[in-house]
Amino acid sequence: MKNKILKVALLSIGLLTLSVSCSDDFVDREFYQEVEQAPLKSVQEVESFVRGGYAAMRSQYYYGCDFLAYGEVRSDEMLSNGASGYYVNVMNYTQTSADAYAKDTWNHIYKTVGLANVVINTDFSSFNSDDKDYAGFLQGQAYAMRALGFFDLLRLYGQKYTGSPTSLGIVLPLKYDPLAKQARSTIAETEAQIAADFAKAEELMDEHADWDSGPSNRTELSLSAVRGLMARFYLYKGDYAKVRQLVNNIVADGGYQVVGAANLQSSYSFAMNGSAANSMFELAVGNASALGTASYRHKLSNGGYANVVIRPATVALYSTADIRRSLITTGATNYLSNANGVKGKYLNASGADNIKMLRYEEILLDGVEAELNGGSAVQALSYFNQIQVNRNLPAATTVDMVELKKERTRELLGEGLRQWDLRRWGDAVPRPTTASTSPLLNAFPIPLSETNVGAVQSNPGYDN
Image (tube, rainbow, N blue to C red; front, side, top):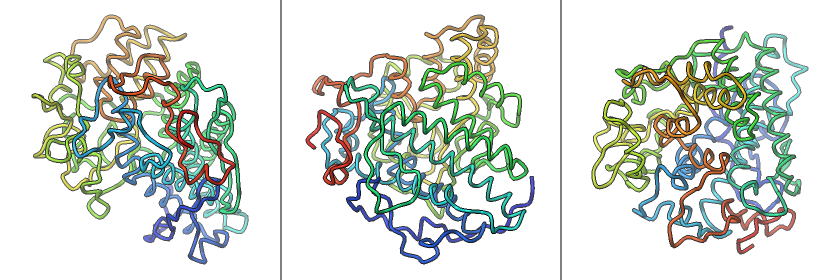
C-alpha cells in the first residue's frame, strides 16, 4: 500500500447545507462554498468529499441509528416497546408522507449519494500520475457508496415487497444537479444501476489496488469490503451464484477472521474501534463525533431510551453454552446493550462506538446460504462451523436453511439486517395486532416534500 497523502481535516459534509428544497431530483444539497460549486481541482478535495460521504452515512438518521432500527423493529427478533415514542409508527405501519423518519432518512441517504456523485463525475485528467492513481481508488469508493445508498433506498422506499402493480424503485441521480427534476425508476432499473455501480467500484479499486489499505484501515472501504456489500445486495436479489463467487474471493484474499469466544464481547468495545479482527468496514465515530442520546446505543440500552428490545423467542434461540447469549441482558425486558456499558453491542455511553457496517461472520453466513442454494453442502458446513466453534459450540454435522435462518439471528442480532432477510426469503414479518395488514405499507412513504413537486410518484397506501 502506498503512503497516502495528508488527509484533509475539513470534511466536505461540513460545507454542505441540508436545506430541504422541493426539487424532485432527490432533494440534493446546495453548495455554498466556492470550491464545492466549482469542479474539484485536487486529490485532496476528492478525498474530502469521500470522507464527507462516510460522515453523512454515520448520521443518526442513517447508519448512526435509524436505518439499523428499521431493520429490527419490523422483524421477528426485536421490536419497539414504545418507550419515549421512538419507532412506534414504523412498527405499527402508521407513517404518513410528512413523517420525520421517512423524510430525514431519505434526505441523508441522498446527501451521501450527492457527495459520491461529485467524486464520480470529477475529471482527473489534470492531476499528476500519482494523484490520478489515488483519485481513481477514491472514485471506486464513491461508486460503492452510491451503490449502497441506492440499495438502502430501494429496500426502504421501493415497491418490491408491496404487491403494487407499478413496481417502482427509486430516483437515480447520477450527477450532482440541484436543479434537475427526475422521476422514479423501476425496480429492475434500480437494481441494474446498483449492480453497475458496484461493478465499477470493484473495477476501479482493483485497478488502483496499491492504495487499498485492506485490514490495516477498517474505517474506509477496501476491495474486500466492497465485495462484502455486493454479496449482501446479491443475496437480496437471490443471485446465489454471484454470492458464492464474491464470498470465495473474500475468503481467498484473507486478512479477516472470526472472533473467538473469549474476545467476542471485547470486539464490540470502544477500545476496539477500527481494530477487531472480524471487522471489514466500520464508520469512524469516536469521541469528537459521538452521537450521544441520538445514537443507536441509546435506543438499545436499558441505560438509555431502552425502546428497541429483544423478543423472548429470540433469546430462546441461544443455547446456554453459546457465548453470544452472554451479550444479552435478560429479564422482564431483554436488551442488547446494558447500562454500565460492559455487556452487549454498542456499549459506549456517549455513542462514540464505531458503526460496524460489515463483519466477516456475515460474509461466512452469506456463503453458507449461497452454497446451500446450488453450491456445495460441504463448503456450506465448513463456513458454518468456522462460526460455531468460535461461539463455544460443537461443530455441526449438517446445516440447512432452517438452521441458517436461526443462525443469522443469533450472530447478526441488532445489526439492522433482519427485516430485509425475512422479506427476501418470503417469510412472515410480524406486525402488531393493531397494525394495518396492507402489504403496500411495507415500503416507507415517499416524503411529501418530494411528491409535492410532481415528478416523484408517491407509494400507494399513503396520503400523498
